Image (cartoon, rainbow, N blue to C red; front, side):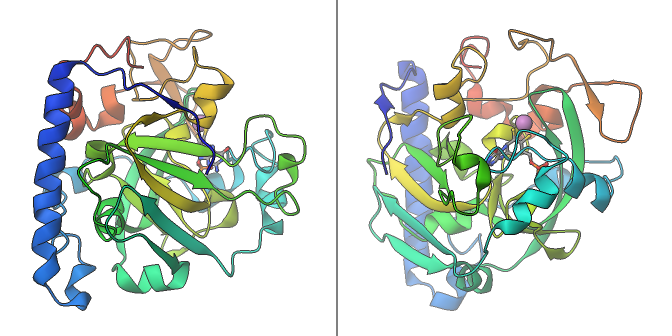
Length: 310
Ligand SMILES: Nc1nc2c(c(=O)[nH]1)N[C@H]1C(S)=C(S)[C@@H](COP(=O)(O)O)O[C@H]1N2
Ligand SMILES: [Mo]
């Protein structure tokens, strides 16, 4: 993978917390070694924290309709027209599809997406999705915790960030021929963000296989961050030492930061982030800090200036 690296912009306190968080994660991952292979797929058996019950019940609004979720999409590999993605994305061939997890790990692996689905038991997660553009939806995903997938590779103590790359296949992804942003689509998380129990791998929605326009066969969902931090059609996950530069940072660093946490107090350079339009509604609703997941994730950023680390 070609990716530019830059120095992590963390203070020492943050670095210390990261190291601590990583140790805890590794210790837990080591515990999993003694378990039978079948048990390793379960997130708790792999040393991943369980989702707090309150997090499962955090979204009280009704989900958007299947029509809304599959008819209004951001997917720049196909089009910048949100209503055209539904049609254009049907050109994508979903099989065969391999996912590679490598980099700073003890056990790099490449697995077929169907084997992944067999390894990690599917569960339902209804999450809010808040696009940086000011619209939002509620989506009933199906999939498994991202931590379960990551722990399988046994990251080393050198790993500090996780980088995700999407598919690069201009023959099917028509807008990759005249790209509006750099492809493959690249996103990244700090390790403690990536193993947080809310971070999810979606392989379906509304109990069915994931529609192509929503990122089939496999996409990452990070519900407390703006939608651009939830990459679709992921093929490659890499543990790295240095903070990666993401596609959107490269395209416009003043508009799209590395963190991308939903934050009503930090305006986009061209618009306020205080309110949002839930697709299907007319009146705007207030945007919540961390998209309403603050009680579960705010601790990841304690001591950080979120206006600087937007
Ligand atoms: N590969 C890829 N992933 C992507 C995007 C994209 O253009 N390409 N757009 C992002 C943005 S900006 C948003 S808001 C969400 C939209 O997800 P949805 O279409 O499933 O609602 O996908 C994100 N993931
Ligand atoms: Mo977005």
